[in-house]
Length: 188
Ligand SMILES: [Zn+2]
Image (cartoon, rainbow, N blue to C red):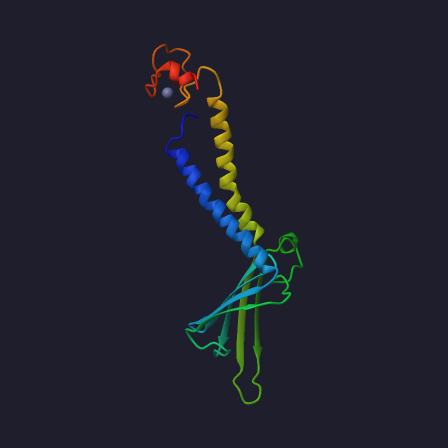
């Protein structure tokens, strides 16, 4: 533990970015309890969707054969609905599902109805609670705070260079590490 070196700056920068992202996640979580945001895209015969509501994010992929639906091939849309949406997946089953981690897969054939073609619908989706990325994003700031406290504790010791943290007990004139005169290095 010495002064603020490159590694310390790296830890601080990563921690700051993570903290900003964590703040964004908190905003998204808050918004999810008022509005349901949905993004949909149809590409190469599959419909992709991302929905955020009630503290969770859900990603789905639906294969429709033949393709039908409101979106044409290559089209995308973003909608947000102001309504009390439920969590974007059913939270029943094992411990993971009850925590909000849900993976679901289904396949069904519908039709043919009213002269239309028979449609094969194959869908899979994954839902994840947003507290999970939030916890991951808070790891780095926690490490940075811990490392900073450790650094300060070290610098607060007597006979340690205030500038670089070098042990000065065996030195008399200047800090052998950074060259700061001992009087300046210890008195602050
Ligand atoms: Zn020094």
